[in-house]
Image (cartoon, rainbow, N blue to C red):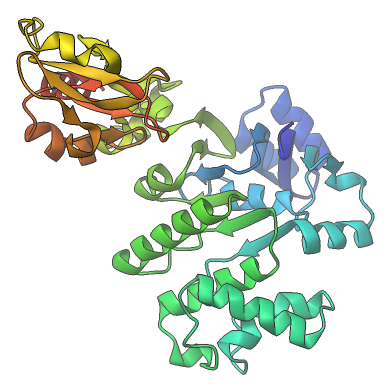
Length: 379
């Protein structure tokens, strides 16, 4: 069951939202609706499911409705129509006290503006959400200290916001959210105010934190490179509607329409496609127990080596026909999820197709320089 479900979601701002909503659903022109009813549709008929543990990026240009959508996910804005269900609870059906409890225990938000209290230290700022939640002082300071250490600010606990760089301030904002230990983290353009180098560092930090403890992250961005780098899936929005939702590879290689194709027209395919997506079956595979039989065999057509597997299909190494066995730890390998851009150098310096392995070492296929070039040309 998805952790967050969004169905038929609309948000209209203006004087007569119900009449405007009915007109828009009937196919009326948005500009005419705005003129007639004094309403603007910020979010239109959005249906999305967000799974637990994924980084789900909502991407679009300014005015696409992405931030309005995010604020409906935690009840800061009420929808004009449709449902938002978080962990089985429909937000519009909750009483105010229940909604506050859901926000306190289930989700935390990180804003673009760091929203730090200027008169408080980094430690006190990181503990603020816990303070609002009534957590005793000693306990909340300990949790805040731990969160600041996780984001690399363990030595800056007593500094005030004006003593911290922009990147450090955003780390405090992230620590404040992490101190709550929420299963859902909502991030609204959280890194867009930072310069490119610090922004990259914050992206790295988020990915590192996600590897340490997986939580559901809904990340709003207008930057396509950021969306591709962070997102397990991307929902691309324009004019309040979702144009397409899927992995970056799906959006790049199988755009739903011309507008999606236009968004991805300048994307470097090598940074999106991964090696496991284009790897092919190894032309010559043998079991480890049969390695000695290869010494007197001629090389297999198209390759000079056999890929040696154990009984569980884990990659053990290479065996050149008539040569000596080369164990896996001495063989260039590519792990599933590695981008084609990262794979270019190891493939270029290897004479044979490079083995592509899973996280537990199983052979998924092999990748040659020819296959790499073909994949990039066809993308």
